[in-house]
Amino acid sequence: MEQIDLMKEVISLSKQRGFIFQSSEIYGGLKSCYDYGPLGVELKRNVMSEWWRSMVHEREDIVGIDASIIMHTRVWEASGHLAGFSDPLVDCKNCKERFRADKAPRAEPGSEVEVSEGGKKKGKLLKQTVGEGGYVCPVCGSANLSEERSFNLMFRTSLGPVDPLQEVSQALAGQSRSAEEIRKLVDEKLRDSAVYLRPETAQAMFVQFANVQQALALKTPFGIAQMGKSFRNEVTVEHFIFRSCEFEQMEMEYFVEPGTQKEALDHWKSERLNWYLRYVNDKSKFRLRQHDADELAHYADDCYDVEYEYPWGWDELEGIASRTDYDLKKHSEHSGVPLTYFDQEKTNPETGKKGYRYTPYVIEPAAGATRATLMFLLDAFCYDTTRADATGKEKSRRVLKLHPRLSPYKVAVFPLVKREGMPDLAREIVREFFNAGINARYDEQHSIGKRYARHDEVGTPYCLTVDGDSLKDSTVTIRDRDTTKQERVKIDEALSVVKKRLETV
Ligand code: GAP
Image (cartoon, rainbow, N blue to C red; front, side, top):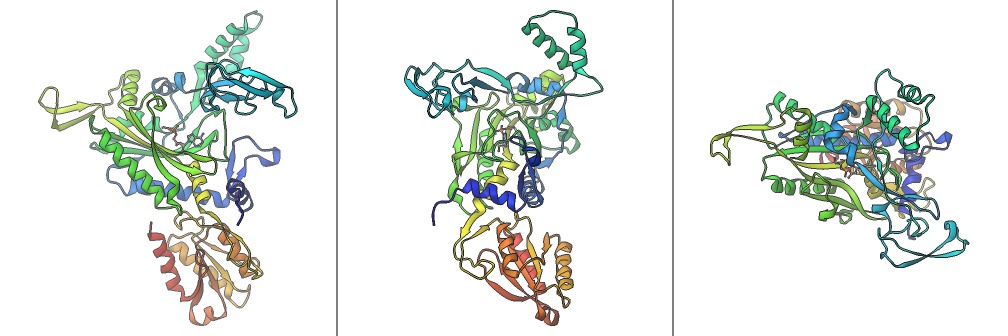
């Protein structure tokens, strides 16, 4: 079979089958914003609840929180996000593209490049010399670039019944000032009421460290987990939901005694990699990559990425950082509230006396729920050339081989025809699945073949068909999405087949 453009296929299936739509599509769409449709919301929630189950419910040492998206501005001062959470931006003077210097194609400083004027295909050819930055424009290849400028990635808004623009206009009315003075004044006036949409979920776990530890009398090593929305005014938004301005994260801060962080990092590296491997078809597309020293964030002494081989190449799926005691110390300094841990059983290594107070070190597995959703779609998508289509003709058909725990519907129940009591029995079976906590879908539209095809495309692992015999002997046919095999079984048995499959992770 000829090579398929996997990204294109997944984006088109996502729209056609109700997984992911462009936000505000009828108004032309909003760049980098997406809406999760009826199937997408189920898939994303399943990804997130699988994460929560393995990170919180199944672990004695981890608890969860759900913090406010807007936090005190001093949180971002202390964490360094207000000052340092910025991208180095560059403008291309040739084609006017704005891009991130650190993501731009590399070139030898001092070497010559040839580009067409204005970035146009038939433009005059120009010779340019690559500057000290050692990169060129990612769009037209030009070396005629502006200086790098910092651009803060946090979304700023204002809190409270204030109108900061009114204050700014009053302060400026009737005065003549330079552009720089105006900018400074506007910034000052906005700052008083400014709040920020969180760019990561992590900070709440540091800020609430003492409350959570004390409320539950937690002993190190222990973790605090959170999932939810984060926002970054990303300059480069790319690859569908891979990098967007509004996204969801699943993060956990694991607090350990100083000196034990390496062991904990090793533990979380393999835990997190194995978590993904349990749900995917192609395990060869995963690897762990250690960060080079110059890639490390300001707070980290080591970091690994779980990388996935996307259609555009290897790229980040999740980061697992050894964040030292940086955040707890910073928040303690800025708030004046001690954020330490006291172990009364332990001997203080410095004094040799019993009782050891320390600032815990932190290991942070930080995953993207929306990015993981994209990865699971890419991993599951395939064409099955052996599958018959709705008319019974052999034809290549789209199948989403999602792990049943991630599948939006676990089972679809069809009446063969819309009469003779079959719809009632089918609905009764659907209710039985609901009673067992399993998401099922009643479906009576189109032929059985088309219904199979539709459910293959959204990853439903099992389809049950209620026919004339079902009413006599309480049996149904159960069809397996992956093998397409059909078997006749008792209704109870069908329930246990689906239940059993859902237990295997
Ligand atoms: N607390 C650390 C932190 O936020 P990060 O590497 O910036 O680290 C963690 O983000 C994960 O969140 C990434 O590995 C990725 O999966 C996801 N992520 C980050 N920025 C994203 C964006 N703009 N769109 C979608 N997912 C994003």
